[in-house]
Structure formats: structure tokens, C-alpha cells
Amino acid sequence: MQTTQYKGEGVVKALNPKAPSIEIDHGDIGTLMPAMQMEFPVTDANLLNGLAVNDRIDFTVENAPDGVKVVAIKKK
Ligand SMILES: [Cu+2]
Image (cartoon, rainbow, N blue to C red):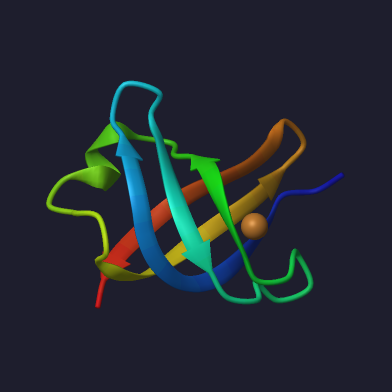
């Protein structure tokens, strides 16, 4: 399986810098998944800096062999 990146949009529902992870209420993510609220691991806790619950974000998800991870986040 190869690594593929997808763009997503959503609203921050929880931040967990210790995991590190982020819970997002997101819209459809291309062919990866439909809209839902879920927790994603993030590749670096620094991606969560400056974010707060209910912020609207654009984010990039990587579908790697070891699972789905958020690799970039941009506040709207
Ligand atoms: Cu999802």
C-alpha cells in the first residue's frame, strides 16, 4: 500500500497534545472517507499549537501503511 495524501475541512472538537491527536468533525475526505466526527493521530504535537475547540480548519491527511494521520493543519 502506498502513502496518499488527502485534503479535508472540518471543525476542531478536541485537542490532545500528549497523544498527540485531534478530534475533528470533518466533511467528505475525497475517496478516503465520508463526513464524520473522529480522532486522528497527528505526526507532530506542534501542529496543534494555536488551535482551539470549535476552530474551523483545513487539514491534510496521509493514508500510510501504519494508519491514517494528520500531517498538516491550517486554521481558516
Ligand atoms: Cu473520518
